[in-house]
Length: 508
Image (cartoon, rainbow, N blue to C red; front, side, top):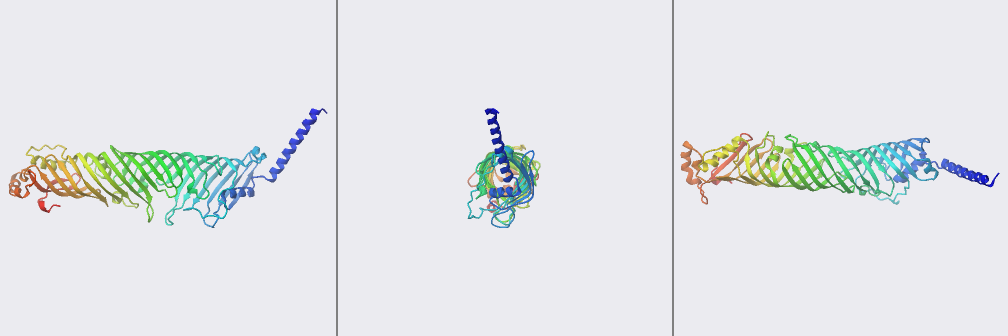
């Protein structure tokens, strides 16, 4: 035998010996046994593990399938931290022969994870995990994330994840993720991708996250007051309990539920979301409602007592249209008034089953310019006062109102209007009263100033009687007359006339 053949034989024997030793060690320390898997999971979770069903896999890859996996909390016997219906682990023989702690795939199906409210109780042991196994790809199907509320009486915030794919998974590294999930508030579907981690063992809600999202088919009827299907997209970053979000949203059929007048709605916003409670703070809002631009800020947070969330907002309209709001908020087939609008207001919407207009609370100031009423009876009443005060023929044009401004507060479906200043050619008035948003009935009363005498506003016997009253209504500061007027009636039957029964001195 030649020296070359001899060395080849020796090399082959050494190699076979090394392989035999590796196989022997692999058989002794086979990682895919029930005991080894429980030990590895306990190391990863720093908590007791229970596996009810187990099966090893040898071909075509090394691995195992565990069923009914339960991860308990360390300190008590309450509901488990998580449970998994089916957990599959896959490795590869090359990594096993090198004794590498690496898995090619972890696949879970039917997982329920429960996060308790607040930070976990401190433990005597180190909170830093010694888990050293890495996973190339983790796929989780049908996962439920349940975040307990800080208020024991309130239900948990639940997120349903249809599928999540994470890679790579390591105890001390951030991972890339891609998820499809369903959230309850507002109910809708989210597709998101980005970076997550490293996981904070001591405080899960401090774990950082960053990525982009697309929010689809979000049904706004969950509020009990508004409706429409929202579509949104944007980006986010921050710890789970304080995620900063910027994005845009559209609602082509935005409407008040008990009015059902859809208008086009779009917005751009910057917000912060608490992933633990679902509370949202809107730092900046730019809204387009039909033909009106709105800017503002607000919040949607859980009520202190009871279930549900309170929505609170501050809005400003610098160059809008009054008809956009009236169409949205009233049941009339067409808005009762049109014109340019300026508004500054605060509004809030409490939780509960009451209709939207009953729950709406709002205070603010407004100004309408170039306005006109659309109901013919209202237009004609205003035209008669205006044109007769100027001793001109009556032409029933639709420009009866030139400006309107004042303050309002809304509650239980009624708008209380105060210090309403109305101006039109030939007449002006200061009014106070109410407008019922549910019935669209208005009742405004106050003082009007006419450029002419009182008797010139009517004819016949009424004119003769009013000639007698002219000295009592004559304005001391301006030419013409100062009289008490009223604007009352439901939409389509609203009329403006003299309120002689009150008298100018009795009007406040």
